[in-house]
Length: 363
Image 1 (cartoon, rainbow, N blue to C red):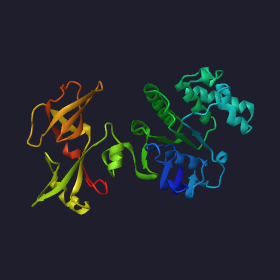
Image 2: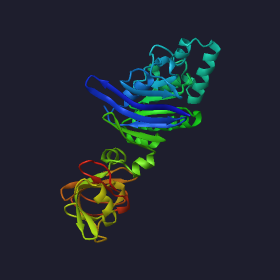
Image 3: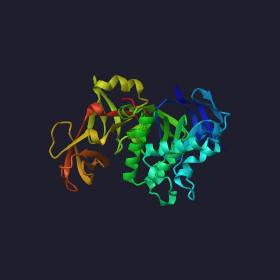
Image 4: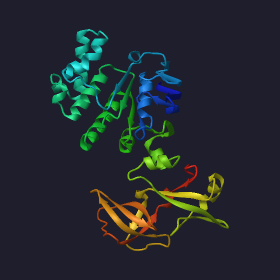
């Protein structure tokens, strides 16, 4: 069964369109991620699904039930906000039990649910403490626990790990994926962090200015982005983009990138069919570039090192190529100095050709 289905969903605030004609489905038990920069429409989408905002157009189904006119409290959805919204003067137990008390469940049923969820989240020892005495990670678990006790059909999570430091975010990502796998409940998770999206999502919807550009599993959106925006948002560091001109040479074809050319003869017919003009973009990810101290082939491209970022397991090199900065990932054992000449070799099986006007990926 589909847990959430959104059809042609549009929401406006005055003259501003926050979300525009969104269509997607979230399967039962799926971890579905909305990935987008601040202001992309992620929060509006979640709030509209939750019933906190009324759509101007479109339909929302939860477990095949149309809920456009159903009150938020009757949609059986739990929403976790970035600020967590815990009651500071109440104990953890009371925070978790509050919604159940509102629904007038028997005391023994409330107690059982709270303690079972606390055991699952390993926060039993916190039940008598107040949120002010807890760490960021502990407060996060309490907020999740408060949602879990309701046994909702769907979890909506709006950047819940934003306030945490890097190590806590990593730990909580693992914890949320574990809970998703163990409990089998659907999660719609909004984040601006592509690492969170790639590591947690079963599928990712990339949203920008209220429009979804692509939906797919992490491998698909990484290897086959539909446009420049998706290619730029997925991957760390992001893809290199180099302006180029398409040139035909009888049966052959190249991308003229200024100081170097790329042979695209095998893609000639595709480019001629799909491109709106000869003005294109050559796209290559930093991890698909090999850097050497010596020229190793006629296709090697000369560059000059302008900065390096050691990250322990790898190093990101910033290389000046004909006045443009190209990033490449090299092993930590590859040493360079500022201003050193190096040679770049592109993995042509992993390159992308993008139409400069439409920004659609052609190859």
